[in-house]
Image (tube, rainbow, N blue to C red):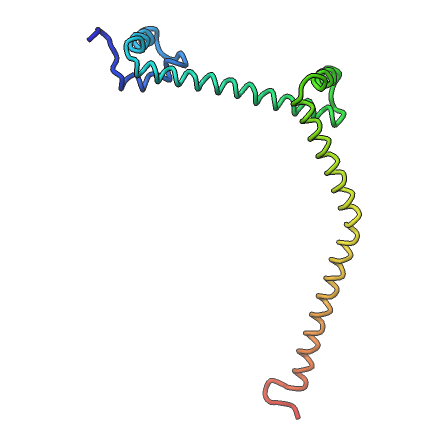
Length: 162
């Protein structure tokens, strides 16, 4: 066994720290030596590195999508400055994602506008229905109260009235 050689069990614990450059130079050298000589650990290291690259790529894609959505949102709401307007209009000419997002924003805007009009038109009707329902409920309660008292007069508690 080589002097200062690390076992596979120890590598499992150190591998992430090695990948993130959190080890001392001496520890890094020992891990690197082990990885060169152990195909099993090297395969683990390769898989982790590949996954790290995939995650970084996906994060960049997500950041681009968020930026695009923010730019389009400010553009649609007429809140964009000249730079954003220039970027959005340029991207609309060449990027299908921008075109699709803009189409979805426009569709959502039309839907919300139509929904708002429907709510505004129906609001007085709904309000009138609520008031009518409350009036009916009060009338029913009054009838119950009248019936209760009329039964009390006709049929007092301690016997029936004749």
